[in-house]
Image 1 (tube, rainbow, N blue to C red):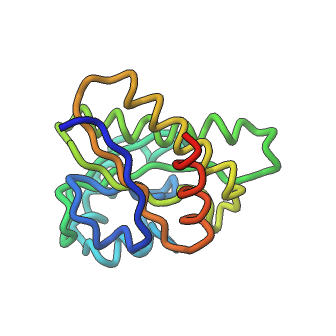
Image 2: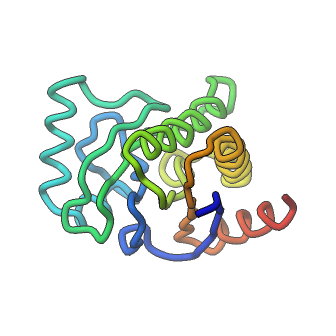
Length: 174
């Protein structure tokens, strides 16, 4: 299976990938947006695993990632990564966002995952500019795939039309 990048408009909780990525907060206890949707759809098993991770390491820092089972979701795993809150761009936000994608992909490889679906990390309540976030996501994923031999298929799952149009345009350019 060669490395591929796909784009769809849809609901990340409905994806049938080996893993989906949760745009989590550092507490790992669920929240709004994608995080809340994944916790609601996945059921208490995901929250219980997140609590165990929290108890072991104290949460998840911005740009880092942890993995749990998929609970009631179609996916086997959920990779929880914490994207940065946008504070004007001079607080290392672009690098932290790239790290969130990169660390999620590293966990995927380490766990034998071959298909992974990403939401648009940090573009909701964290207010990261959608165009910059899309550019960082695509560039980081492409670079990662080019640097690793393990077969990995990545799908960007856009919930809204604006993100979908941005990703579609950027993927056509490259």
